Length: 199
Ligand SMILES: [Zn+2]
Image (cartoon, rainbow, N blue to C red; front, side, top):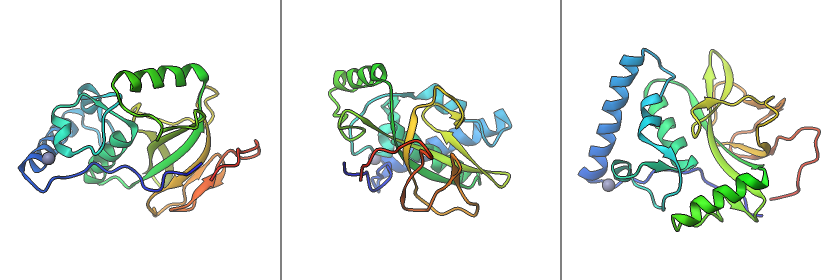
C-alpha cells in the first residue's frame, strides 16, 4: 500500500474570493473565542459544518458554499484557527482499522455524493485519517478535529491505529500508545500487538 505523503491543505486563490472567505472565518473565530471565553472550544465551527464528502481541490472560498468537510479539511482549518489563537499544534496523519459496518456506511455516504473514497478507505481495509496533536501545558494531547473531541488512547471503542506521522516538529516530544513519534516519518504505533506490514 502506498502511504499518503502530504497532509491536506485547503487551496487558496490569490483573489478576493478566498481572501474574503478567510477574513470571514477569522472574524467568526475572534467573536466566538470572546463569547466562549475559551482558547480551545470551536463549537461555532461544528455548528456550521458536518463531516462528509466533497471534491478536491478544495478552496477557502468553498467554505462559503459547503456544509460538509472531510477529516483533512477539518484538520487544516482547525490547525489554522488554533495556530492563529497561539496554540502550538502539529498535524497527525494516521492509518488504522475500522469495523466492517462503519466502512459500509462511509462508502455509501461518499458514493451517494459521487466522490471517490479510495484515497482514504485503502484496499477496503486501511482507514486514512487526519487530526491534530496539541501542546497542552507541556504535554501532547491528540485532538480529533473531525469529532471535536480529545482522543482517549485507552477507549476500547476507538478505531485501532496502526501508523502515525507527525507532520511538523513540536517543542515537546509526542508520544502515542507509549511510542515516540518522529516528525515527518511514518511510525508503527500499535505497540505489542502485531502490525500489518504496509508501506
Ligand atoms: Zn477562492
